[in-house]
Length: 437
Image 1 (cartoon, helix red, strand yellow):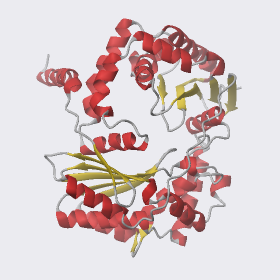
Image 2 (image 1 turned 90 degrees about the horizontal axis):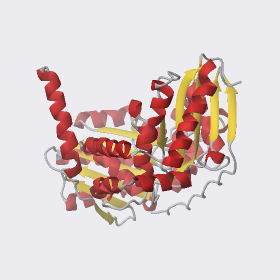
Image 3 (image 1 turned 90 degrees about the vertical axis):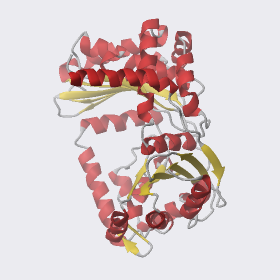
Image 4 (image 1 turned 135 degrees about the horizontal axis):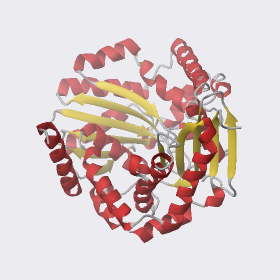
């Protein structure tokens, strides 16, 4: 064995052995004077802070104006207070800081990374505060960003991989706020006005709807000051109403959309689980065996290894505030689409009925625990994990107890959880491509 290969093998063994006993930092939590929830993890070794400010302002809050949340989030850093986009970029570049915004179905966020040097950090926090509390939504910038969004939506219509994802969510969620894509549709984005963004920002970007996550080299008192500075420009406001639950699926359904392509994209699944589901760990570990572990997963072996029907086939749960989807996906030659779908669905039905073998379960646990440390090996990754915990009100010891909860999962736990969630009589299937006829 070469020295290079030996080194890689030793690193792998180290991760496999050390991950289960990785010391997870404690998450400190409090409510700021403005009413925002704050989550703080002090770390040592690097003079850096990673900060995320998260709002319940994702696309599920669009109402009938699909694409409104994404366009609002995307315009935050195009101008704020006295600064245009160039001035904001210059301020951040001068101090070596970085800032970005984003949106999902459940949330919108601003991420900030800065050095802890007092003067540089002060500039970074001031810039972020202005972006959050005083976005300009300049009319010319708005028209440019809207046109860019419309162009992206048009290009999306030329990608069967995008189309199958949109159709799948519509098949699962019907009229629920999760049904539409985050960017919206051309017919919903085109009528949006600058005033729509101003109103959305005023309603959802408020302190009572904010979560502040701080990870890095700081003391508790410093973290309290940072959170207060970030939220100081926001109105107190109020948290939005709870989302409605998606309507239960009553039957199976197959949807086919012909697209002139050499390959057919396939999605199939059901309503799966919430982020705080009591069966989260049995479903998570079970799916690692079924379709979440790459080429060694059940679905991949049946579809790819045994029959060569697809280069890859997978499945995963997407836990959300309300029931997120369980979905299987693959891409295959048009003339093999029906067979590949049948094989994948058979693998799902078999697993839902019988669960994993003991060997598969133990291998899945080792793989999950071996990779756990890699999910927390930087301040940025840790901040992302803490933000998810905060957004979904998971227990503060979620990361600290992750290893023991994975270890505790049994075959019977997985069989029970999958039997109650994966009903073969309610699977929704979508095919988009040349084989969808």
